[in-house]
Length: 58
Image (tube, rainbow, N blue to C red; front, side, top):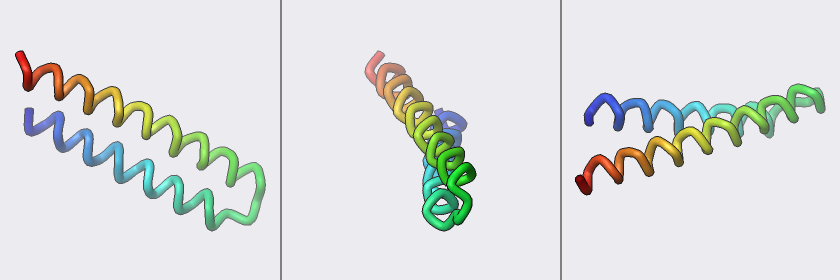
């Protein structure tokens, strides 16, 4: 379970980093790419959080 929690934190950190890069990027293409990456990391983090919740309730 600790490994899953660590992975969840890593995904959330990556999402935040990608959001920051997207905000700072001057190239529209890079801005869009990093915004998409941030959104993807958020989805993965949400799915992992739900999985952790299901494991914790069984």
